[in-house]
Length: 100
Image (cartoon, rainbow, N blue to C red; front, side):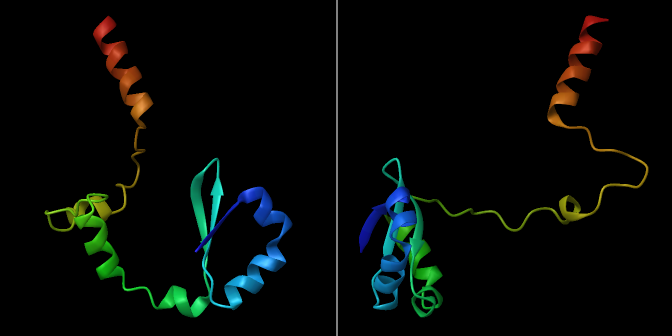
């Protein structure tokens, strides 16, 4: 696996694509932080996501949820004629009511 900066990737994209075509995986970083992976399409499709999640959980990087799926009401559309208030608007309304 090879790591390159975003600037270098932009300048040498052709060479990086050649390396990926040859089977190499390229990690693109910005400010030292990985932001993208260049992998061949066949390699991307071959990822065993369940095994990857298991590994990340063992390493303590992630913690899987223990609850089931969310309440189905969350996914329902908002009732017609009503507008959802944003968090900021709710906070401003609350402050306005407390000042009265």
